Amino acid sequence: MRGFVVLFILAAAMAAVGGRVASAAPPSGTTYYDPAGDGTYWDPSSTAGVIPDITDVTVSNTQGAVKWYVHVPNEPNLACSTALIGIDADNNPSTGYPGNGFEYELRIYGGGGLCPPTDPVAVTCEITHVVQASNGAWGFEGDPSATQPGCSWKSKQRVLSVSESRSALSNTTEFGFLVVVGNDYGFDATPFQAWTYTLSLRK
Image (cartoon, rainbow, N blue to C red; front, side, top):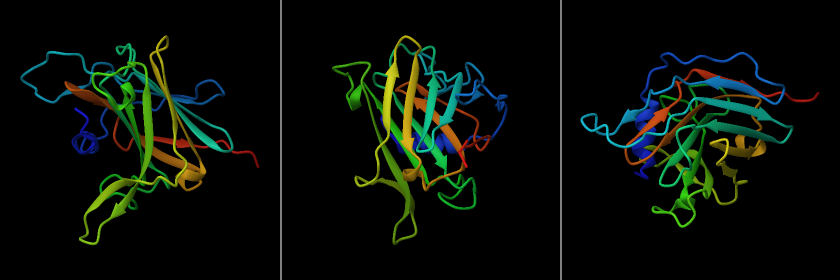
């Protein structure tokens, strides 16, 4: 299922239950842990198929970029899967998208956006930003002029690597974030409004 709207709404509705913010990882970043086996099937009456299972996410930054490393150990590749990183760039839930505060979403399409894919390890990605339509409705839309994220799938480590320039994220210094990975069978989401990353910036 490539429908990010459904994926986003379900993920955003999840309460911040469980989820541990990890102690500092190696100097390269901070690692956050997600409980294993906590995915949600689209159809609870049918548990056939494998749901992507996020176990940990490491975030790091340089002066100019933020990087996420999403570990999905039960996925040999992301073919026919999609991922989303919701970002509250000012770490203020009262601004941005109502209910979660996201100003940006990084969207990642496994298989290069094709299902079935011609290259199962290919991934494509884009950045979207929050908008409010003239009728008051909120949503996210792409911005071709924005610096687009870089992304890759590391098959050996089973890690999705995503990077985005800090300037494309309103020069954030601290942000809240949510990661979701889903496929036709269901999705796994990290704890909602539970993880915050503070950038390490040289004075």
